[in-house]
Length: 172
Image 1 (cartoon, rainbow, N blue to C red):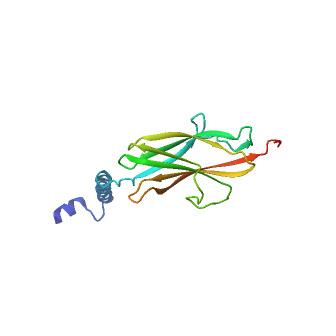
Image 2 (cartoon, helix red, strand yellow):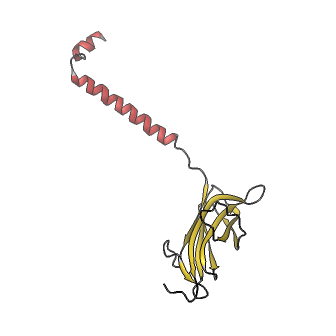
């Protein structure tokens, strides 16, 4: 070993340091690749809810309507399942309130309830038609509830539409 050190002249040779650093980098890279390949964390199971407009796009949502003129509108409500299993009896509760900054789930009665089965990796779609005929500012919430052993449980997932309803004789 002493001869090898003298022939490479490790104390004075900068190439020896470069080789040692290169070997360390190769070993560190191999360990990182092995960790990522074998210890990849699995994502937590989840369900998602989102809204699409009447053209199946995210964007042209009703924000301003006129009472008894165009105050009924429809949106597609989509629920995606990434739970790793089929979810039976998933519910979307549609709730309407005129409160601002509410806490979810809203403490008001649902105006509509949709129930469906969502296979793992699939999307369940339904269409919700809402009619708001009294002037005012409304928050239309779509809450996702999933089955639990003790009954439906709020998933923490929801979508909100803010809709202003103007009187029929109002001018914009």
